[in-house]
Image (cartoon, rainbow, N blue to C red; front, side, top):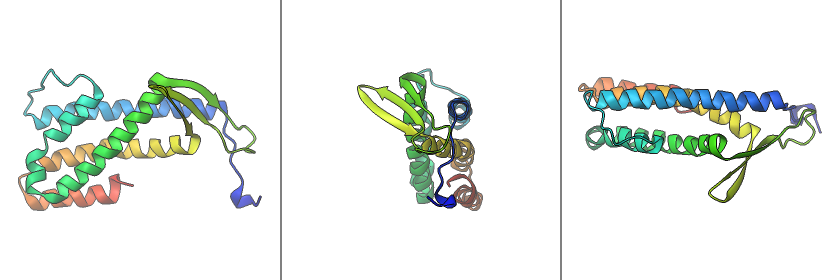
Length: 172
């Protein structure tokens, strides 16, 4: 194995740090969703959206007018919604279905990850997948902000600027 192909060691500390980082980043995404739902609904928060899945759906539904008026808004909203639901699945597996942790302290195997089981389905979340999720979550919060702001933007040019910023900065 060449130096460029060498697998990096992953310790128990690395795995615990990934779990904590994902939960912390998810918390910021969830708080932002709640704030943006309130802003998009003119401060009138419906009591019905209690679960995070419901909040994600509510946030998406509140942007129907922008989607109808601006096709790019709908495209970006679909992209962000897909990322949110994928991230939620992994977050739920970590928070509610974690059954094991595998480490690779010497970097020989490349199989460090989390073993999860949800609804009878087992899945291994590899360390690289966890690192990718952290990058996605760090961008999702700002994508939610930008898209929500664009949804209430009356000036189409300002909305287009928000979309360009999202494509460049928040949708890696």
